[in-house]
Image 1 (spheres, rainbow, N blue to C red):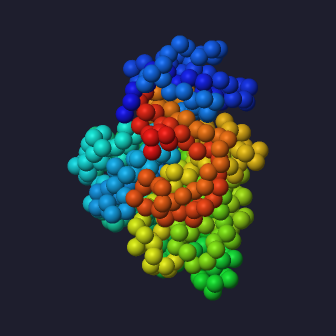
Image 2: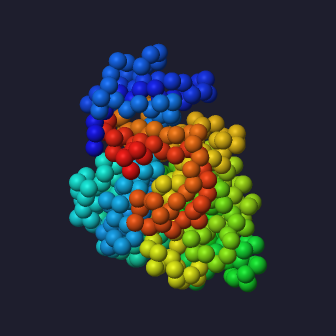
Length: 432
């Protein structure tokens, strides 16, 4: 990792003017020491990164990822997962606990933190801990010990907490520790054995589909429990119109609720699925076009706070089992920003600042992180992006161990060129 002192000739988004402006960023002791306009400083050599008219942003933050380590290293591990994250412009990522063993003990939390520190390609890795032991929904974990070990919140992501009393008990414990509860919302009784959403694709193929209520029922239940306990409650990967409506209502009456959405739920619907291709199988599943419009509106009006990838790698052998038997999930690090920049910013639907805020400043604020800001004094966690060059998504070139994506062959703009963490270049397109 090469330490740098200057990023010169970059274009920084000015929130007040709504324009990109050429600026030079000086870095000292891993933090932003100065941001200046005018002529580039007289500096050269390895300590200078010439952004040459490219976007310079605060480093992207992804609060929902799966690194599969420990236990599923054939899919991904901390080394390859953080390399893939850096290639996508992410400087901070939060990993889910559905590993084997589950991240449900202080020892496992420390394992993730230690391995990330030693082998994580400079990317900051923040582990969530499980709500229940082995994520079985039977017995709560030791929240206090997990927090002390370095966990940043509690979730059984991958499975929904089925018992309301257990979720309320978890919320009360988390509230006492000033920690968030992060929820995968899914009522198992409505989804068992199903693998696509209830919509046109399911009807056309004679398949029983997953109903929207399977997600929304838990959102509504948990919003009421969050109101009763006062906990910070965060909803994972929102995908349905009903969920958006319930979150909006909860926010309107003062419930401490936040939410996230994934790029694939913003740009794809079930009607885009080309056939029984398991690279289009994810959880939550792709919903109807009406749901897509609802989550877009929810993001635009602030009901949904941030964008995450839900990076979920699986091996080619696992995905080759077919739509019904293959595991849910797609990889997301290396396509997230280009997908959204191309679909929403280049088309004029969003400003560049709108997208950047939901991948930097807002997730940092929601989870109280010391990052996500491009300003003097902030950590020098930065992403340099080429906005004008179109490239094709090539899954075989991903730095992830896995290539399970529906976006292969898509031609996109907005590709990360370099990723900087604490003033050091941890990845660059030129050296990849």
